[in-house]
Image 1: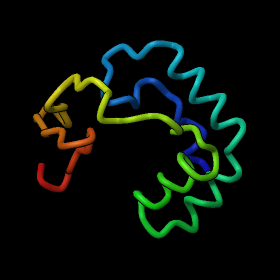
Image 2: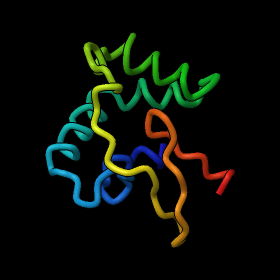
Image 3: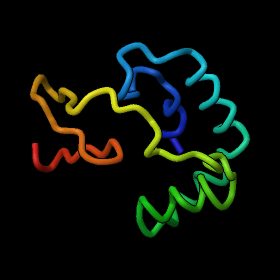
Length: 98
């Protein structure tokens, strides 16, 4: 999948202005081990939440013992095309309401 080739690019991380290099290294290590499985699951997915649970919790267990509620919130909004867009619960961004 072409999209996975650039998925670890720090410029794509919305939360951090300057993401730590460890984020890219961790992403690349995860993708290297799970790329074929992720591609297959993304192609056959029913929805985003279901695929997140399947890959993160059940298959790879990469999110085991991770509570996203404990993660610090950095911004309540991001800028898309120079316009503020609110960041909702769990860091979700609704570009359709923009």
